[in-house]
Length: 320
Image (cartoon, rainbow, N blue to C red; front, side):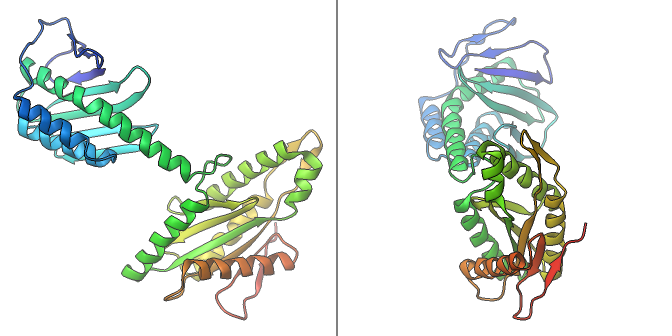
């Protein structure tokens, strides 16, 4: 069903039920049809042509422009992290909460310069009936894609997401001549934590470490779990000097964690290798250099960051 949040001309709550397309409101029932059969078919065909939320809403907006002369449309779904805007805002608006029996599908608002009549509202609500199921399918598909690229324990990107994001970042760095760096973070003595405190505590440590990495990096940086206790941080538009600074911050953040279990307090530290992308370097070569730097940092006792951008790289020990 679609539940109107607000309208410019009425405060009455109107309800559109997805199952039987019955309109209920305190106002008289409006009986004007959506339009010709051709118009219905065009809308349904356009909405079923894609599994992209953006593409489906684009098609719906174009149809609303043609049928109702709307000038703008906004869609928001907090759980799916979707926030889309189409066109420009008008003086009068209709806002709906989109709901099925099982799911909340988000909130949608349309606007235009002219007042929406009762017939306009009925026609738009009938159009929404055609939107609900394609939108639901697209949201489910997007959620499945996200799950396939998300580490279930830490809720950050997994190895597949890393390779996809890094490939995009390298292509962007080539095209726009931007710098690009990566950090490879490996916990020190994590096996001893698992053995001494149990795997459940070990999982909690990994979650705390991820939170510390995110806190120590910028909003534009991306964190991925490569596997086990190994993580990669993607630093877009970041030269070697900046990567070294962030690597040290990550080390400090992990070493500063205060984690306790039934077996006692847990000391955490990490070895961090940093590498900056060089022209014509593949993502495998970039990650290999970061991995080499990480192992060199671990060889210096851990709790250390090291940059691998030349053969004479020197470790940067962390002092707390």
